[in-house]
Length: 255
Image (cartoon, rainbow, N blue to C red; front, side):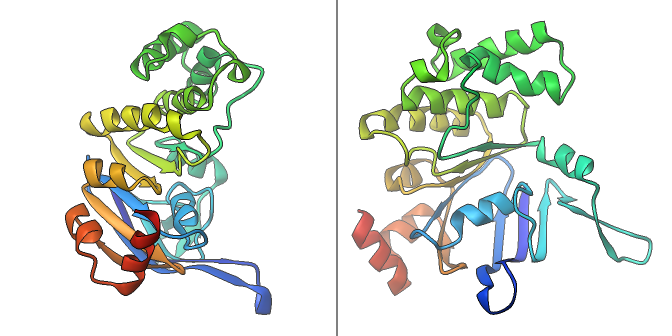
């Protein structure tokens, strides 16, 4: 589903340039869950944003379901940047759930979930609302459809955000530290929804510090530090028998 090759991301120019990703390779099979771990500033969130074109990569390539993101090859094999409308169409196939929920404060939970299918897909309001109600029930919020974000807990808002991403029928779901802004007692309800999604066969890339989730749900764990992938493999290997000293040091602090 995802194939990132030698991905670099540089912010700025000249002496002040910040080289955030330094040749990252990542392969995510369809239907699998990949968890990305690492300290703050390691490039995890930037990598995620490059996987759905919220950030334009500086070098390398990203394919999603076999399609090159952001560029096309001409007859001579040269790369050309895609029109923003085409990039938006590519992005619409990829769901993204952010650390801060980014819900529309003036819309109810139902309206938040139904908005994008109407605006982007051209779905009728009635069909979009019916689908939104189904998705809110799926994330355990059928009794909160008419509530505004300010009337919901952080965990409930995050579950609305997950339902909103699912409303576009994505092939791939990206989660950027989805529980780090939540009170500890609300984390479990969001992770439970994500576990349910994983069981349903959704392809997921999750940036998180939830080691328990990585151990239980991930098929593949990636540890990043300073813009590179330091170690990766099955959870049992990476979390229980890490070979890299930097990963052992990281796990000693978070476990």
